[in-house]
Image 1 (cartoon, rainbow, N blue to C red):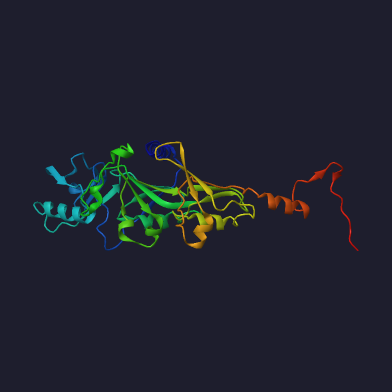
Image 2 (image 1 turned 90 degrees about the vertical axis):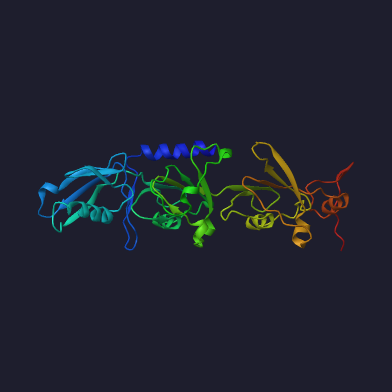
Length: 332
């Protein structure tokens, strides 16, 4: 399935699930806090002055909110409650001496929640009231499942409303992906290690998808033919064979075939690997890719091996004479 279709499905799915869990990360001390935006509902309370108190006022599309006796209103967009309190207090000093003001956001309607989905233990939507990192949201959602792969994709579905002073606004749409919004890939192992470049800030409207591990398939003359998930994002041929118990005695180890999907095609190319030389270190091990099919063929037996197995009873076929099966005699 193409990325665009997958992402649109995810967004539609979450929009339609009214029972979908929605959690809130509360504002932490020492951080700037929630930034007001258009559509938010704000209350202004002035102690002892009911004429200046406003139970509810909605921030308009220009980012302004109305204050009693001030027709122009004040700019509320990208301001915190604390900053708006100071702004309103300063305005009211024109009419009041030392006004006691508090400004509180009653409804946060300006930003959609972030969504974390895929191979996490508790997929959910998160209302962000402060800065939160990708690693924090992964922990907040209970961590990744056992089927999680090595990559996380973050889609930025909403333009950022406020300048954040970092590289968050640098995301560009990659025309090669044919997406309506930009996305970036992050290594799960790098995120877990806390590497800064792999642990971005997640913003309202972002969709975080923890991808499922892609399989490779091992078939033929191996102990336990099966599919193996590429959970860490990389797996070599020797590691894959070791995971399924190794090869059988009859395996043709000098010519193992790897059938690999070609880019943007359903066709496969064939890669040959000499397993014996790889184990000796004289040939480079091959790194497997998602959906590779590894076929370990059965080696052809020589005439000498067939005769030896037949006369010792190890063969599966019998050598017959005109009289039938060769007779057996006991030498005393």
